[in-house]
Amino acid sequence: MRIDLIAEQQTLAERGAQLLADAARDAIRQRGRFLVAVSGGTAPWIMFEALSKLSVEWDKVHLFQVDERAAPDDDPDRNLKHLRDCLIDRVALPAENVHAMPVTDADLTAAAGKYAATLRQIAGTNPVLDLVHLGLGPDGHTASLVPSDPVLDVTDRDVAITGVYQARKRMTLTYPMINRATQILWLVTGANKVDPLAKLMKGDHSIPAGRIESARAVLLADPAAAAGLDKRK
Image 1 (spheres, one colour):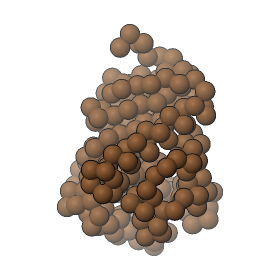
Image 2 (cartoon, one colour):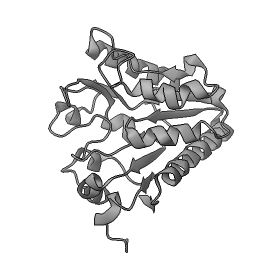
Image 3 (cartoon, one colour):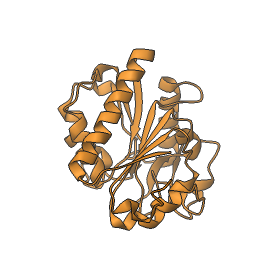
Image 4 (cartoon, helix red, strand yellow):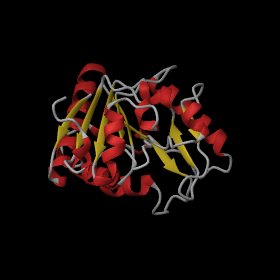
């Protein structure tokens, strides 16, 4: 895994945005489209806003969600609400290319199956995304792959439903789906990430994030999060 340390938050966000834009251009040049899945969190909103100002052929981008809370469409807990505010509503991304997780459906398990079918329809029988953006929680979770949840052991589905975590059930991409991605982009900030980031860099399976494949990953972090890393590596 390649790691870049960037102290200033706006610069970090702009670096992430540039990596996303470059990945989009490469995929569009090679295959005619860019398939990307993004996560929520505070730092990514700044990155997505920066991305909205860059040159991307948005009509050739398909935007998926890595995870989403089971909440109404206009609920501030929804990643999609913030994603619309900072990116979707700012660019010429066709509505049919925005693939929101159907977390308002009454039957969440069936909804997860429906989202998996959408992934297969667009990205192939064993769907492969060009890039998956991930964050890292203080407890070591990523996506909505949270400690001790049965979803960690799901290997036969690309999309699954978690138990209640921080007052919400969630829909999430599973390890098989994430680990098939051509590239992973991690964005990790804050002193409360020191311990999980050190474990992530070691591939420590004691945290959920440690089970994500690292060979094709780029990690952007601020010095506060990276304080526990051996800088010689």
